[in-house]
Length: 259
Image (tube, rainbow, N blue to C red; front, side, top):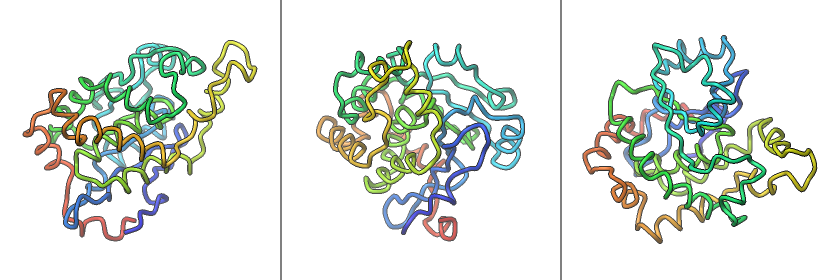
């Protein structure tokens, strides 16, 4: 079944990559339920009207912030993180340097290598996210970083894989980021102390190329057999995975008509 991206994205003024993770298939009989779990970019930039929309129309009750402490300090948490929404700061990346210094953390220009490093550094954090999402009262929930591509993309891939979604749809979801306006990319390019090309990050790290996610998923399988194997090696129990699936999966017929 072809997923229509325009049905998936939530139109907001303050961020550009806020989208529903529902509708992806896990076998022939189940899909990820619509309206339960969202991924996003700069949630901290939501306007007052955005925050009202997300609270009232979507009903978000949990925000999971994957940014570093430095980013949180510089940019704040935003209006959506205020009570009664439950805000959780769970940094996914140990490296806290400037975007222009990315390669000091991960020398490879192959982003799939960087994603594997990120995943392995964040094993404990990913386990905490899974455990958080085992609670039925945590939904609807959204997780976000800055661009909504790398840290958010790794966590989205991990969660979808743990739910039983196949590689093709995980890759599709990752690549959707390239379809949306991304003003953050321009800010990232200018993140050096000097606005000259030598201070800007390589263009490879700004793309959401499908082959990047394809290689990343293959590397996870090569090293851990499966994403489930990785999760269990980092403290996720079988019962946690069962509860995660109970909270997020629904019969496939639910997705019909949503695109």
